Image (cartoon, rainbow, N blue to C red):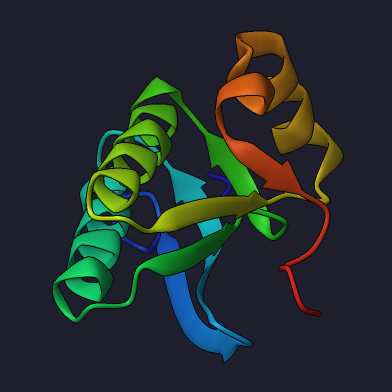
Length: 117
């Protein structure tokens, strides 16, 4: 199975870097109902540390379902309610098409690269 661990569970990799004033979460693998809580927790942790400018890089992401899209919307809400901002970085044509088809490209700040790169 694509994107699964040896035990059949979907894999999600989260990498954290900093670009300018943005904390960048790079997401590899699949964001679905099993793995989305990890991404939600990563955003929650950053905001609790006072890091209010967050970029979620979906360029290396293989798959994202409605649960993952819900995490993106929730992350935007959490950060904007606290005076911060979320940028979704997506140069992946498949994931970008998903954002376009669902209309989230109009709701989220979707860019080709992290601001300041």
